Amino acid sequence: MNQYKKDFPVFQNKPCVYLDSAATAQRPASVIEAERYFYENMNANPLRGLYELSMAATDAYSDARSCVKDFINAQEDAEIIFTRNTTESLNLVAYSWGLHFIHEGDEIVTTVMEHHSNMLPWQMVAERTGAKMIYLEPEEDGTFSKEEIDRKITDRCRLIAIAQVSNVLGCVNPVRELADRVHRNGGVIVVDAAQSVPHMKVDVRELDADFLAFSGHKLMAPFGIGVLYGKRELLEKMPPFLTGGEMIEYVRLDGATWAELPHKFEAGTVNPAGAYGLKAAIEYLSGVGFDQIRRIEDELTAKIFEEFSKLPYMHIYGSPDPAKHSGIVSFTIDGVHPHDIASILDADKVDIRAGHHCAQPLMDYLKVGNTARASLYLYNDEEDIDAFISSVKKIRKIMGY
Ligand code: 7TS
Image (cartoon, rainbow, N blue to C red; front, top):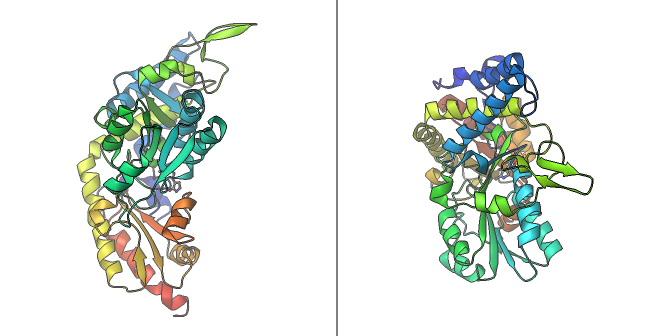
């Protein structure tokens, strides 16, 4: 057994082969305990009360913010905005930056491999402002050719929105290169880091990202806490996304002025227990280390590739190199619908995802309706992969081939 698996209570309570971490990760006991500790010892509405419990909640919430700041190497706490998830973070940028700083005739560049969360907000901005959507199309291995980038990113490009890691292909996209390009035009880059932050060291300054979004639940934190990083000079110029309590400086009957960053973007009661759990998750991840996470994921992905290569009816999408998959393997089996693959695996307690993975334009581009997807994390081990492969090998027979 992998040395980390015992840290995750779910595997003792409901034994399973969990290969759906790209959808949501399992939580270690330390994260579950942190959230519980908050409710048992610090539960009050933060940022408001002047009594001890509320001040403890406020401290826990702001410590979590500093922890996230260090984790992604932001310059200051004010650049870290807590949201519910990646989707909310990306919508915040679209509504607040996009609708105010993108104009008719501008170009918004994204890719056909985006999750709907990083495509629909930009389609909305384009529709409302009269900007044009441009989609980068990858090669079969998930990379973008220089010609594709040169042809589609023109000097009218005001915004690039791109996933650092695709949730279907697992490829790592060239964020820094694209950041340098869009900055030459005075534009911005928005990085969807939902699938990268849990698996690799992400440094917003090294990437020169203007905005970067991720979800706590994919990196073992509780549900309902997400992050938007933004450069201060951009956040300062943006109007609030949501209005209400806690995001104001002063309210009069004829208008209001806004609170300092980051509170301007955190309207209403926040999620301090989630933030406290996110801090515990970052501490757990840092204890394991990204080199170790990568080693586990790459070894197991290589094993899946090797076993699949012996089965002529299997197809893997994306790079032929298992080390370029970030632990994500999307596949199909000739003659078998991906939903049947997932159901047959479920009977053996092997959990994978099947469907369009909220990336329908990518499915169209790949000319598949759906795929099955196994996605790994640090608690997976060889026994999981053996069980997965032996279950996969039965599928065609069960389906009558
Ligand atoms: N961006 C990417 C690249 C994602 O993979 C996901 C979720 C999101 C954005 C949205 O994250 P949320 O937390 O706001 O929902 N991806 C998946 C997935 O691949 N299977 O289930 C959810």
